Image (cartoon, rainbow, N blue to C red; front, side, top):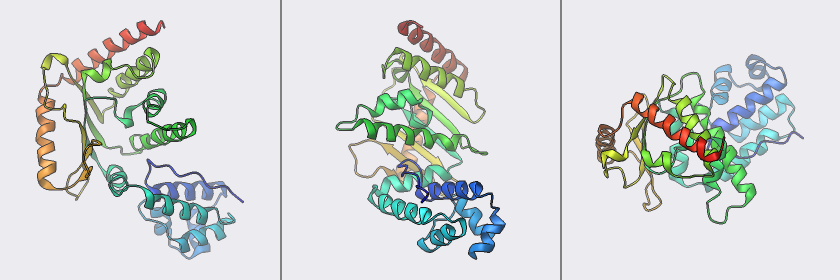
Length: 281
């Protein structure tokens, strides 16, 4: 029996099922047309499944198992994804879908580097501070966070505007070498034409963003939605116009205090050199 992959909590279940279906189909050297003929599903339906634009059903998983001779692997994966997905907080499940569909993201982070920009070692250091987390759970969550970054590597990744407080560059996470590598990654990422990173410097004396991190997502034909990264509230994802409008206004006010993209890159590289010196490299 083919063993299905484990559940990745940072990827939409339907996206994960689609990726696994595509992997099995390619391994069998079977075209979508042939699979469609064997299962009775249309080519467009299979394409939508593999791209994560359609959710699987138990009947569909069973028919794919039969055509690809997988001995129930996709059916087992569907059951696992469905079961675990139901256990995730509703706000978290909804945000995964929103983030995946977004064509523009606006992020403010006053404490740590956002997950989508974290290096593996930095992510592991952050996740290892979670109370009661076992080494196995830390590794699983680190792998999941790295997989989540795939949205930045797709053919048309979202345009991403990232505002970071200067404290993010100075706060020691992991070790000096981990910090040096993380800031090097930020500097490299800042060269992307679709990602803009700006730093709000200490010299701005700005306090407006200190209430916490947030992200505003924009998707074609959909109202803007916001994710508030705070453990102190019950609703973390909101599409209420008043809430999103308030956060958008706050985002603009924070950005008004930020360095330019060029100045920000200079500062990131300066901090990176300091961490490199501290690490002895």
